[in-house]
Length: 322
Ligand SMILES: C[S@@+](CC[C@H](N)C(=O)[O-])C[C@H]1O[C@@H](n2cnc3c(N)ncnc32)[C@H](O)[C@@H]1O
Image (cartoon, rainbow, N blue to C red):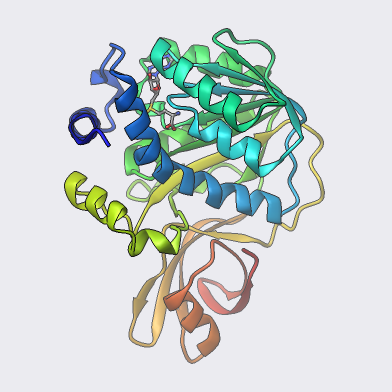
């Protein structure tokens, strides 16, 4: 493990934060050991976000378009490897693009090792049935983002994962609105086809973020413990934002579903849930006396998708969808 390289990367991510205006314009990837150390740690943490999203998509029966995957801004390629693993045998071609040559080569080697039956190409755009984008938004100047959006507009479906910060997540919501104009419908996180409720006036302080399922062994593994301590990271709570768009015919959907934003806030005898559904983003209250079971679930192990029974902004019952 190249701890110095990890510290350098962490300092860089903190320094540039969410500000695409001041983002580093130069390739920051260094040695092979830096890429390998990133892939083993930071990228694996990003992988938990992908696993959470992909598990939901599989559970919901969503399947990607077969054929080619384009991993744009691939870094070490964790996102596309997670996607290829989620649907074995569905893809025959993977295209990896990144401004960094060392990153592209690293990602290609890892992908070829893991998926010998898939043709792995480096660079170029090509046609992308499925576009995969992960953790690039805060690094792209406006002209590069426009080029990415032009590529996105040609894809059949898009899987896009970003950090769960206020700034980046709201930017992703704005991109949703733009891309819906290119003929896509939103598969997730949206449970409706209406305009994004987070961007509605009055909701400026909110952002559409969700929590990744962190593998339980991470909490007891000394290696992860050292990583968290050395890099000053909370591995117990891994927020992320995401967007899944598809231009194929939309299957019938249950528009009564609601997405919990972030996590429920628990109080004595009641819970507050920021919930997104067809009637917008609303702060709902769930009283323990209305459903002790639901209150317990929201406290101990909240899901991400629910079908609420509501009376106005009161949740009087409901069931977890995911
Ligand atoms: C934080 S890393 C994320 C890498 C990978 N997608 C992941 O999720 O681990 C951001 C990546 O975007 C790439 N990148 C930054 N600016 C870019 C640009 N203008 N064109 C292409 N790739 C770019 C960087 O080289 C880096 O690999």
